[in-house]
Length: 523
Image (cartoon, rainbow, N blue to C red; front, side, top):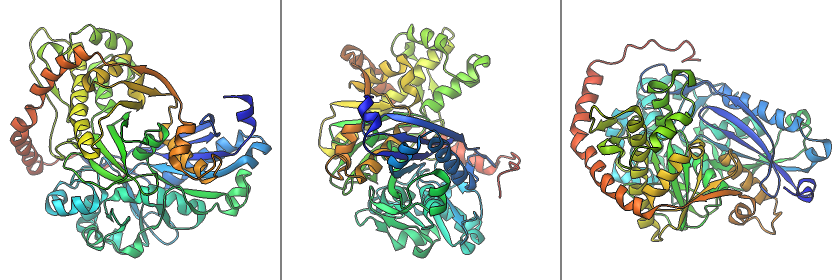
C-alpha cells in the first residue's frame, strides 16, 4: 500500500455476515484493508440436521462491527467513506413483523430438515426456472417445511427475507435486497431476475412478503441519518446492492472471466466461473452474478475444511481442539499419494455437486491394520480434490472454455499440504489470494465500482484493480495422472452405496433423534 493510495481517493466499508460471524472492513482503491472488525454469531442446533441463528444477531453484529471500524478512522478518512457494500450467507432466511422483529429463528443454508420437501417439490422444471438443483441449500424447500410444520410464522409475517435484506432494512428503513443476494433463496425466475409466482406458492409466501429487488452494484437507499451521525459518516451515504458470499469471493479474487475460476477452501468447498449466458446443469447451480447481466456457475461440496477440522477434533490431538496441526500435516505429507489404498467419500454433510443427495453419508473404504490417522487425513484431503476435479469438468462444459487456473481463498489455503494436493488432483495452477476476508472484499469491489473511481461503474474493472495475490502453486502433472487412477475408484463408491444411504435415512426417520432442543432454539 503506497502512502499516496492510503491518503487519497474514496474509501468504502464492506460487511460480510456469514455462518459463524460478521466482519466489517474498510478498503481503499488498491484493495488494501485498512481496518477490520469481527463479531461471532452463535449457531443453534435444536435437533439433528437443524441449523439456526437468532436473526437479531445479523443486525447487532453488523452495527457493532461497522461502529468499530469507523471509530478507528480519522475524521478526514470518515469523510472519504463513499459507500457501504454488503455480502451475506446465502440461502438463509427468517420471517419478520412490520417493526423488524423476528417471528422465529432464521433457518440457515446448511440446515437439512427439508428432505421430504426436496423430494416432493424438486424437479427438472424448478431447476431450469431457478437455476438451482433440488438439494439441501436452496431456501425454497425449508420455507415449504415452515409452511407445512409452522404455518403461523408465515401467516403473521410482514416480510420473509434473506440476511442481506434484513441488514439493509436496519441500515436504510427499506425492505430491499440485491438480485444477486435474494436469488439464492431459490424463488427466482432467474432469467427474468425476479420472483416466480409458482415458486412463491411452493414456499408458502407472497410477493408482497419479499424484499424489493435492486441490481447489484447499484444504490439501494441512503444510510439512515441517525446511523450516519452515530458513526460519523456522511449523510446520504449510499448502501450498495451486494451479493451472496460465494459470488463475492469470486469478485474479490478477480475471477471475472470464464478461464479463471475461484476456489474457496472454506467450511464448504466451492468453485465458480462467470458466464454472460444463462445455463443450467445437473452438476452446477447458477446464481445471479455481482457483475450486472452476468451469471455465476458454481459447484458446491459441503464437506470442505469442516471435514478436515472434524477429523482433527474427533481423531487428532485433543489439546488443539480441532485447530490446524503441523505435525499431522507433516505425517500426512509422508504418506504416498492415494493413501496406500484408503479411499474416502467425503459426504459427511450430504452431497451437493454432483449428485445433490440430501441423505448421502460419508464412507472410508480400504482399511488395513497398517493404516494410520495420517493415512485417513490424507485420504480426506485427496477426496475433496477428486470431487473438485470432477465438478470443474462440468464448469468447463458449461462455459465451453478450458480453465487455465484457480484463484484460491479460505482457511484451507493455509495448509501447504492441502494446497499442493488440490493443485495436483485438479491439474491446475492455484494462485492464493492475499486477503483473508475475500467475500467482504468482493462486496467492497461492488461498492467501489459504484463510485466510478476507476473511470466507470464496471465491476470487473474494479475487481482487477483491487484484487491482490500471493504465491502460485503449480501442479505436478505426473502426480495428477496418478491421482486420476485413484479418483476413478473413488467415483465408483457413491453409486454402489446410494441404496445403503437410503436405508440409513429410512432408519433415521423410523427412530428419530431425541436430542433436547437448545434453550436458545426459539425466540
